[in-house]
Image 1 (cartoon, rainbow, N blue to C red):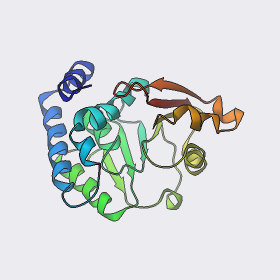
Image 2 (image 1 turned 135 degrees about the horizontal axis):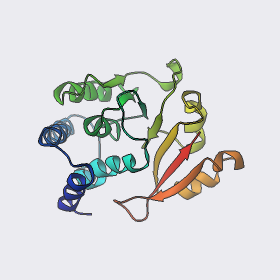
Image 3 (image 1 turned 60 degrees about the vertical axis):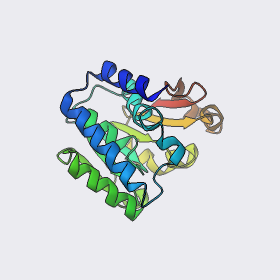
Length: 205
């Protein structure tokens, strides 16, 4: 998927308004600027920012419950803002982004402020282990931890209706097979739009 194809897909799939598009472009500009000061994403993937990161994040909405201002989206290890910032720009979900690294959390807070999403997006600058539990409608993690450890750390935020959206790249099937049979039944694998060899683990419960 080229950058032009990625932007065209995003406009068509989500009927992005001019204001929302400006927020995405603001985020993109802030990210490129911050990459000069800290290692947020690789330089190579930065050349394909819309395809490799923005659309790669936005596609998760295809498997999520209908966006609602009362629903909580918990994003673990948000890092450079994926998928948490993208989800918060595109939807009214109450997005809780967990990022324990101080400089990255400071960057995320800057993005939240400058894209005007502070009314429904929050950066939690702490380790997940230190957080009090709360029920999340969606739990996502793009590069947080191996699957078994991810679930062990975050299952206390899930309910029987929680949707898990976990991009796992080429390791999706292998990581899924590493779970207990009971856990395996929670998930299935969807193919990524941005990489035919990558998988997204979609689960419920």
